[in-house]
Image (cartoon, rainbow, N blue to C red):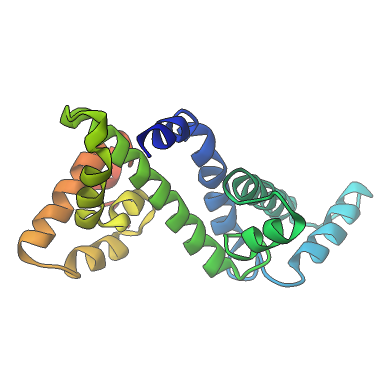
Length: 199
């Protein structure tokens, strides 16, 4: 189990890069930027742009193409694509430009948060000094105490962060705050997100 986690960690930056690129592109597309029919519409717009037709929003065409490319890359790298059916199932259960924009953004952020949490798990095990044969038991206990939302903190609005902190109290809230700061210290979330944006 530990060997598999170490092997995956070797590609950590490669794994999260597509989602880090897709999320801003999805957000710029807005509420109607993805979903059924948008792929065909984007093809038409792209064709018209190539033909030199003026008045098209070139940025939206580019954002759609980037979001589609990076989400496809994410699914291909992280889903079981050994058969056409498995690849289709991987696409339907992941963020893609085939689902509504709000869902695509939320699913992409959740996937990124969970991947960051897996990276944090490995880094904290290494810092624990425990022998390799203790990993499975340690990981089970560590996962039980973690809140995956912590690793998506830097993709939340100030209001979402406030709501997250309000969702728990006492020792659980203190643990959440500690995990947020630890994730920032370990470079898993942007440290600047610890300060209110003032928006």
